[in-house]
Image (cartoon, rainbow, N blue to C red; front, side, top):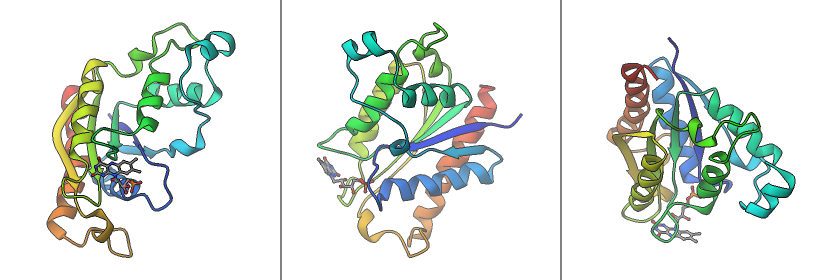
Length: 192
Ligand SMILES: Cc1cc2nc3c(=O)[nH]c(=O)nc-3n(C[C@H](O)[C@H](O)[C@H](O)COP(=O)(O)O)c2cc1C
């Protein structure tokens, strides 16, 4: 059975360190046999969640498209940047929208429940965005996602990558690839 993993990042910034780290972790999953789709959240219409808007106009097209993608995948690889000690509003907005009831009447939360996820983060700071991982774990836990213990937080991200997008530190490079690999293996073992 092929494991399908959806990979996304909480920063739409051009040159995002988290986007770069996500690509590496995704490669680790591909190397262990997973099918990985990296989506750019910037490509989806995602207004800030508003219950009145939802009531009047239903789900925005971008949310419906993301719900379909979530339905098609067994696990999530998430790069979670840290803003003021937590994860970004972009990620929370995506999760909140997707959790809303789908147009087929099924709860959006069902798109998370029983699936697996792995987290990576990158920051120019010393903790590498680790605090954002903690708060993201809490949210995913509430949604019934099993977040595997394997993770990676890249500190000094502004000097960590070479021109080809690899980490200069070979041990760190291996560790990031290992996160993607561990996610594939966990999904296989759980039979999600
Ligand atoms: C509003 C804001 C708050 C931030 N707060 C933190 C923080 O609490 N901890 C941290 O390590 N970096 C913080 N940063 C720096 C980000 O880690 C840095 O901008 C990083 O490059 C963002 O990820 P990206 O490269 O994927 O866009 C903050 C940046 C912004 C814009």
